Image (spheres, rainbow, N blue to C red):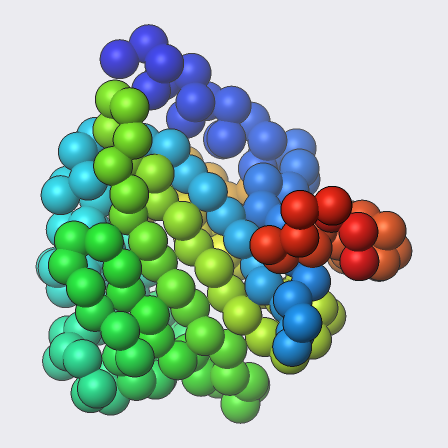
Length: 190
């Protein structure tokens, strides 16, 4: 329990200091925004938070009709609608969807929930053709994941960090190609 609380407090503190907890990685055909969150809860619990519409509404938005393989969905995030298609659904491990936001931009989101010592590892990967698009979205996804942390722990989500300062911190971290992490590269060179 102590490690769970410590991890949650460290993530919450980092978000409020505008410290990026995700990373933008370079791929051969674009970029990926990557987040890894460790939870001291069973994988099934985290999977349910990700896939059950009533639980999803607590931290992300109202999903209709639900995640169904090959089907379109709509997600109302409090007036900020997103739509897309479910590309992959492999309970209780992975969910992949196209994500069309209200600005007409599309990306691919992949959620993975993996068993690990003492709980579950949640991985979120957001793929796009441009790093700039991911830099803009990184702050929002970090704040959304902070809300998920609170809901998973049974807490009321706290006030959001300064989104603009967090976005600027991500922009600083991704403005130089030397700061990009190469995806699946053993040497780490671009």
